[in-house]
Length: 331
Ligand code: AHR
Image (cartoon, rainbow, N blue to C red; front, side, top):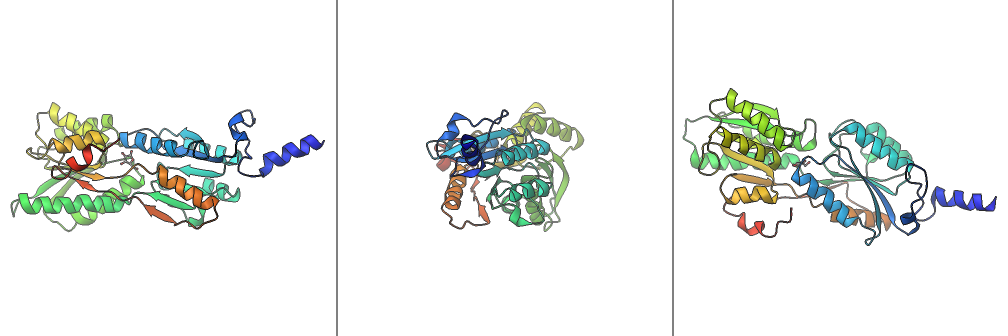
């Protein structure tokens, strides 16, 4: 009887290690140490950026640093993320970290996390919820500002290179529909584009943030439009596919070519293409967010206040400044 009571107290919450875990409801041996248990729902593994983002969190939330990390890859499906979050709630983890595939659709599950008193840290993208007390903080990019940066760069490029009466045809290849990265980058770019009557946006079409889809879509756009002057590609992986398509069709691109390429992320492979003059500009989005996540959790553990929003800033790389960063780039 006494043993049952002691076991129940341990499972119901004393100290940081108090979780039931695993399918069989057993407490894994690792959890006998005094670690902070974090459930991390990653949205997928669609891009080089995403791989770096996942690794950054996994490298920071280690046992050596005082964490026990449970990881789930939702493979681009919101229902998988909701399932993972519910499983973390039922395991009574200390914190939930998640990178939402889309902005909307989270109210119910985040309310469940709040009811269970589990702080939720949103990383990378944003959530659009009615009540912002459903999450503790958001750590990630300002996608709108990234879109504006792309627009402002194009303004400057046109000022130097475009004839006065010339109209430029712009194709926008968007990422996952409904994601912050897609919504924000499109809105930010549109904000600038609408102030230029001589920019004609031919189409906004989704390449789903992947190289395969980026190539497929670009091939069909090259069949549809005779004259594409600028491609705004909302991530580097799609840009790799776009470049393959341009090469296949014998269309020149980059600094000395016919099609100007604007990309986002600034992963190493893309920065090499910037250095070679194949990508005109790359708007950086920093995936190394793990350290900040760990820092926020430590503050919360110490009862210290945290900001509601941490913006991870980024640079803009062209052939003129890319060499300074290329050597140190890890991802
Ligand atoms: O949310 C960040 C975006 O998602 C990155 O630009 C992209 O590469 C990733 O898939």
